[in-house]
Image 1 (cartoon, rainbow, N blue to C red):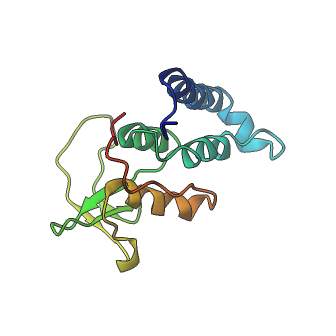
Image 2: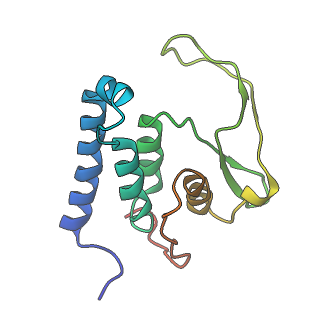
Amino acid sequence: MSKYPSYNVYNDLIDDIEKLQILRSENLEIIETDSNFINYDNLILEKIGSNMAVLPLDFILIQLDKLGYAINLVNDDNSHWAASVDGLQNISGTNEIIDISMMVFIESNKWKNTPKEAIVTFLRSLYDEIDEIDETNENDDI
């Protein structure tokens, strides 16, 4: 049996996460004022975390961006990767794309061998139940 979900299961997973994002955006004002309301952020993080091995990296990054995490995925030119939200940069006050200067702070224990491992490490700082990823997974862009 394959370790990868069938095409339909995979599409259902992507659809589920995108539907949660829509529900989250539609109910954001309620979520911020009612502590008893469904925490869509946690539901989305749980879905992503329990399916790290099969979700494409770009999809994961886009979903985290929608949750408000401005993640910097950094390479150190020695084949190490890290994901961080800690740093300094100039920003545009609009949606205009501008030139920026950036400084990212990364602790030495955050450097990993793959971009996905770096994202897993970042996610674990938010949510402890992130599944281990299969480092032999050569089909990272399902």
